[in-house]
Image (cartoon, rainbow, N blue to C red; front, top):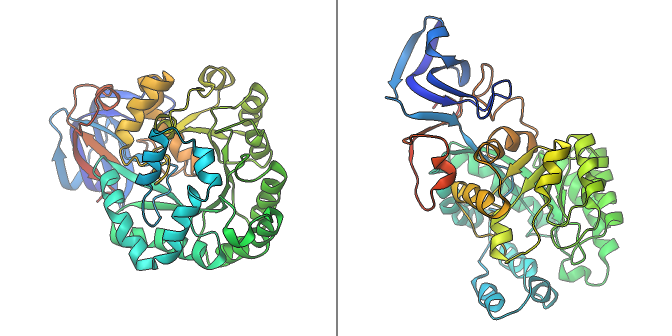
Length: 401
């Protein structure tokens, strides 16, 4: 069999769900052609390959390329001053109601050009890529108008022109109420549903639609309208749900077959059951939990009991999770949420892919999947979760390159 590249003498954590744990193969080989995995498995069972290029890994570990399924990478400015305010005792809600929070980032984002947004995001993107990330979800949500939401989504799409990375864009126009609609949340939702979503869909700028269902954001009834508009335009949905209170948003999202419900600290048993029934992924965001000093843990035991797959993400954003390390997010999830090593690794590969609707394309080392690899100088996969501030990446492969 002819192939473009082969990686030999490797230990594989395939994340193949048909194998136990993280799908370990101690003496493995991966072969690809045209960016697609032809074979990933035991060397002893591998067909005979004629590879144009062969890399001997000398016992290094290969995992699927890591996937960050929830980020707000595109934004102007930062919110370091608000961090100081929270250290002095101000709450996230109080800062938001005083005109800070998302609205302060909105002002900086609106003031920036598309090119300026791209230039600002590249260092954050590079930090994630340097840790073996090959696919990243990028949300809008800091423009909060048709013009600036479209600008943000175009900037997110443009990232794939500057780096070898797979970008999935999510329209998050229903993130906060812009000042021009103060006191008229329903009027803004009208704009989102009648103008912003149709425009993003017509231009092919969004892969999904998200919303923030919370007391300081939008009600379940308003979110339902957003989801109905997204569905009418053929876009799958996701939701920021149950972060600060239980608005039963996860169950609402599950009713629309949502790809994921994210945050979930205040998720109840009924919401867990609804997610299980719909196949909605639970995306946990330990960086935000840590940064805002949350004390209520997401219901991990209930998610396990109901068989809801758990994904992990950085939630990289300027206000509540300025985190650009998916490796550290895994350590936080294990330390703060008591996830196992296997759950953490599945959370940034197999389950993260499903949270983006890409489970059939990426997230595991299996024939037919895209050849996205992370090659690590480690003795065991647990090191990827155990270490803090240490990056053992030897090489990153994106679509065979």
